[in-house]
Image 1 (cartoon, rainbow, N blue to C red):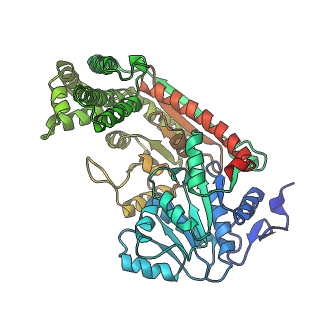
Image 2: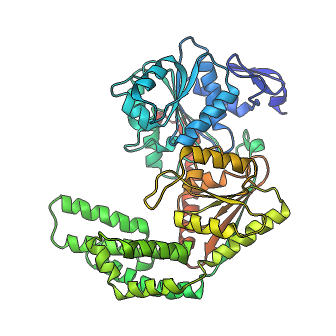
Image 3: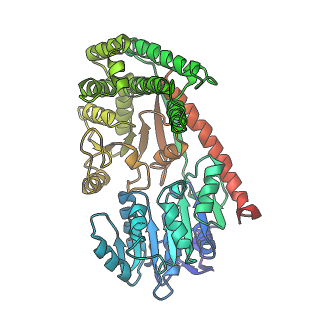
Length: 524
């Protein structure tokens, strides 16, 4: 029997005609879902970490908890999220569903510190990125007046991230903490660190198959579309691989990476080598290590080139090489690299290639097919690199009925990004179907207000299970979602796909572990 159709009381909330009734909730704005109400009531009793698949309403659970907290006179809530667009999205949602006395304020870096202090004193709900709050609590205001701290994307609460000192400061005053995440990751040690850093006492974890959420979850169909590397790409690949394996061989003979066959050395392995070398140099062990770090620098550059060639295309590689060869202030490793005959040969070959990557043809076919089947479709294409995003956008602009727009972040080493106002305008135009294809970087992965889309395309697999889940979560909210992943056979694309699948499998086991952890005394 569907409880949302009945009139009943769930703890602090009354349900009538399928909606939640509460003094601080606008009528007919929050559909009553039994699992959300149960989680909200438990979160009102003790510090809680909520782990829910994307699309099941973590923000609504937070709004329910805030509504009840603000029933108390002079109470306040602080809502933290890692990015400005996500902060604004939360304020938009809370504004839509809550009717509370007092101001809902968004803190930004452009607001003067004295103004933030003034707004802090008069506001009931404050929305902010954690960096601003971390800096302000040093000398502008304290968190003693806050009754509830909401931490979105709570899996970030590790290491030196700003969530950690804020929670430590806030915990002194004994207020309530609510952490939210769709993807906690697959590392128990890091998740335990999140639990400790946020002083969590209760965990509410659900997977898509759990009985109380199953009816609210829409299936997502995932298809992997494989293509071969073009012959001209293979010609470029050969001298680069020869150079890479030479440098990895030297690293192995120096005592690094000897545990792995050359072919399976990853970018992370090479980065970890650099960290190991730096630690040894810091301990006074120098000498030959400067030669080792020289080889590591070259290997990492070449690895980046191969990754661009295989997963992105010749055009992004060409842009990368042009910047390197035109750079005026070169490091010793970069000078050595651009003078290497194999590297110069690869650069010469790149200049003559017209076609960027076979995946582009697959991408165009997929988009044309989707728009033929449903002409008013909204599509997101995710790509790792801005050079690729520029390239794909210009290619898609030439297709009939395709109206692409690039969607990137603000900061960029190689050019101007999009301001927050530009991002908001693009998303509004996308929602209103002035554009129908959003060609996006990772900035579109986490939580921001992107409308329900009909198709999500990964231009390349990514090894992060958290980011993959966030990308897929952009579809399948109201209907069965569709995801297409483009893969180049026998390349780093396949390695990244397998890495992500293994990590996601571990994460599902972690969620099952979390379900049991709340009854484990070790947590307390």
